[in-house]
Length: 479
Image (cartoon, rainbow, N blue to C red; front, side, top):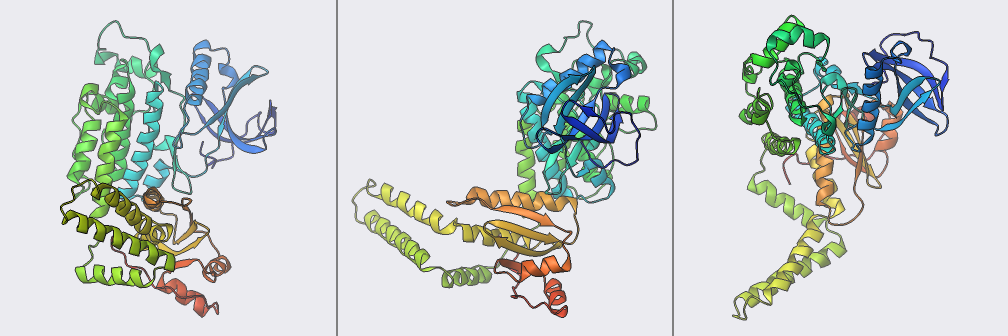
């Protein structure tokens, strides 16, 4: 849950203890309960505690739905889903203890205009990955929206509030066919569960909703992140739900020109009125999003000239370690042996082991930790907000001007790419910092792990009488 309470809310449970949880403050309140910041006295950790209001304890249906939320969320283990620790009842009060997630809701990120297209795609990919895990467990969230997704300070995304989740295997099958739209007002008050503007057409009509309903809501969310506009929002809830059920999806380019055509294709498929016309599952959506993200990022990279590539290759050769020269020599000998056998008419048999050896040597030389760090630095240093990069014991600190939402996704995506290509060694980790003092920056920059410093940062440090090893900006082109 978002731990930043906007206003001071007085509540009789604040200061009391439920079982092993000491309640400290109110974080938020909704139709399914009150959320508190609490402290786990047994495990000594902060938690978010969701409590069913006392006046609703006697409501059997509401109590059943509340417990269903806990059991549904507890079945899912995924980095993009807030973890449920415990569900219990204390002196007639039912509560769920869950992970306390620090950060900004995506609604706040959108409002502060911190997102670019890459940032929107990164967030959507993470949410889709979490939903894929939930759907495979037979669980539908039913209330995907920017306010229910938090981006943590390290750029990771967490889906919150499975209060409207349901188990697919227990979903009743409608017996009366499709609902008539004339019952919308009654459905809105009674049976419809969700948030207007992000609901799927089947939720609006009160008919059975499966995993494809979440993909519709995620499509609305991606539309909003990319354009700043909620596609089906109208002046009143009834008009909004009518638009969700019947109106055509507006063109994204009419709100923001020059968006990729593939983005509009992906979002349009998510927002089809009929579930069978959408992606059949989240995995298909993830595959298309990954392709679009690669193409979008590659379009932002300046290609290197042949002269620059040759110069960089020569520079890397002159800075190889003695052991790396030995590996390189072994690779050259293996290739030479393969060429000799190829032209000696001895058949293909001897070429196979030599080809395997050559490939292993190539990967050993090319995908070693130092080269992967150099690749990471070259890619990340091109981001305008990055001030410096320092690496000590595989831990990379990236100093940035401000905590821009899309930075986290872009930097972590590049780190994951480099870690996947590592042939040996422990993976790198990254910490993105925007709140460092001048003294903290100096301590980082005077060490031996400095990889990149932006010119004005180095100048400011020198003007303050803090000389440190100078580093030139690495080439920002592709490896």
